[in-house]
Amino acid sequence: MSKILKRPMFRKGGPTNDGIMSMVVPKRAGYQSDGSATTMDNYTIDPNDPLYKDAMKRAAMLLAFAGPGRSQNDRLSELLIKGGLRTMAQRPRGNLLSTIATAVEQPVGEYLKTGETEDAFRRQIKLTGLTGAISSAEAKELQKMKIDAALADEARKERMLNKELAAKTDPTSFPIYDVLENFKKQGFKPRKITLTVGTGEKIKPAPSAILSIPEGEIFYDPNNNLYKRVPKEISSVGYVRIDSSGKEIKVEAPAKKPGFFESSKESGAAYDPRSWNKQRFYEELGKKNTLSNM
Image (cartoon, rainbow, N blue to C red; front, side, top):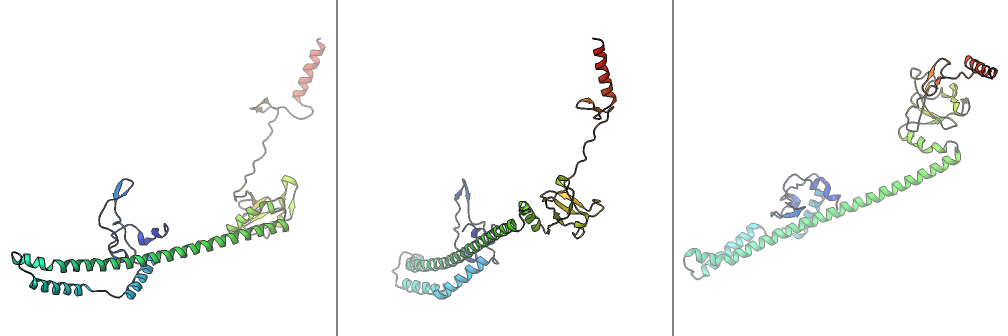
């Protein structure tokens, strides 16, 4: 019922002493909640809420079967007749007003009691209509939850079957199955190319393999490297390498080896890797001079 009570029909904003909730909420304050006095008089009813309409329809049907009951005019006429007859038969009690008050005391009590009984009956009818509407709404919501759960379970089973099929039909692309499915949910139609150039980490899509791929579309190679087709203005080869989230992978240029006379932060002057150079010449010369002086 917690979800039902959150409907607009029960939203805060005004009194509840009319409509389906008329004569239901007590007028006294003092309901304790976290130490502060609160009332239910700050709730209003949305007449356009389907729950309200359903409750009113049920209450109207119950009242139609129960009958109109005694009207206020009928009860007032009974009060006047009984009061008049008792006044004429009543023995004088002091002055005239005392005599009349004594005579009509019982008829007035019956009149008020009859009104309270009629009001209580109508309140009960309206509460019964509301209870039935809430129960019906809860039943519909429970049924919807069951249907949603069944659909979710069917979707999960379908995904598992598709995944098993992908593992059998294209085992090389299976490791990125979930990534490809995620791209499909975003509106892409990833396709696999088979024509590549290079080997190992230096493998690249062959230019002829990407001619049929539209700009903005995603494709991948046999090594499961992901690419995105882009205009020539962005990339001269017509594509960029991307990661599983679709973000471009920036390729860093290899670090340039410093020359012989260029300094290095790590080890001072760089060592020329060639087989013969000035540095090695002077090192060998120094060794020879040391041996000759010994």
